[in-house]
Length: 558
Image (tube, rainbow, N blue to C red; front, side, top):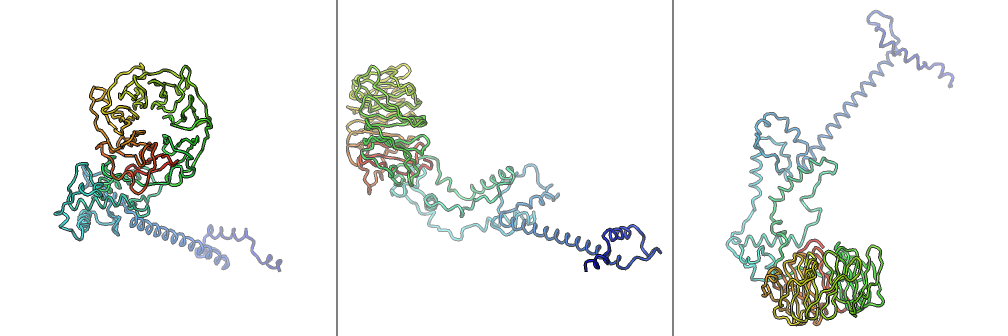
């Protein structure tokens, strides 16, 4: 069977040769020899096949062009005019009408319409914009809003709507808009419902992205005044403090004794706690879980104070001992340092570290202040007060040191010359117990054993003015601890001798926040407090071994 098929089959080279001859030789119409009918049918089939193939290619090309048009039309409908600007530039008459003073950008209002701006006739563009503006008018306007006035300073729960401290009466329409803005602040929308989402792909040119973002920015300004009402700078208003209670900072491992020190690291995420249970603990603060990172047991030193170096490289730990400890965060190594050469102090429990991380100042005996280098851990100098020294504070630049004590006076020391440059009486103070300077350097607060806190302007005090800027009398027992937050708008003052004895002072107005401490929760006996570097978190350690953590809503970053 195979032999028969092979005998009757025409060789492939013969068929190809016949095809070439059919194209090269003249046909039988011109008087040449007649062509075989089988060969003619083969040539016709080949020509028909090529023609059909060419038609299919043309049909496929038309389908692709039609699909591309449909896609462009769909994208224009969804995202605005992305492709039609190139077609708009071909119109020479429109190009001539645009002069040099014309705007170099436009605001695309086609997102809410079915047709793109460029799909309409150019002459009717301005008319359509005016019609859209007319259609956006409210359906109903309450005339009573304009005639009604609301006193937002009289009602406590409305004071948060003020833009200025002395603002009181506003119109009804302004009251409604501020309520809506406040609601938007407390109830932010989800991301998928945000109208300002960027639908453009990441692989587009950077120039196009910059131009598109500029149009969006202009649209944002024209659409709402929420940024002007809600995000009106960083000014904190007095009266009520917006805060919320979070999970305790040391919830994973509470302390077995009173907490004497809490402090945030400069990166805002690490918090150290130290207390009389002789353990130094580190927690990663996120407000939800607050994971414990490490715990260090110091056998022979109940911790009275622990503090980060301002550069964040180490922790200084002290107690009622003639020595202290240094914990290197990089090497995870604890070094025991002391006693100090030439000194007989039996306790180095109170100290302060300079902002430049160069000097540690310890309280000594009989009014002496001991200056220790953070690099060599050696005694580099001493300062001497007339009375006993009980509190210290460095200025924000680290060049001067403030001290107070049993003689009721405040000393200013120049650390370069190690001499007292100024000494002044703290008004109404017999025994000074605490000092604190503001991060800006223009204010400092002095607390006494009677519970009085005097706030001074440092330049005025050094100039000879003895009158304090403000006297705060909200505590009735000895002031143990004070702390300014990062922008000096809040001053925390506390006393460890009375329950809930912690007040937060609004510094610009020098008034305490009326909703602090919380009325429905007890703070126990507060012993220390600290604010995160950007003000978002506030941590407070108490005598019960807990570190309470709060979120201050005015500050968006921790």
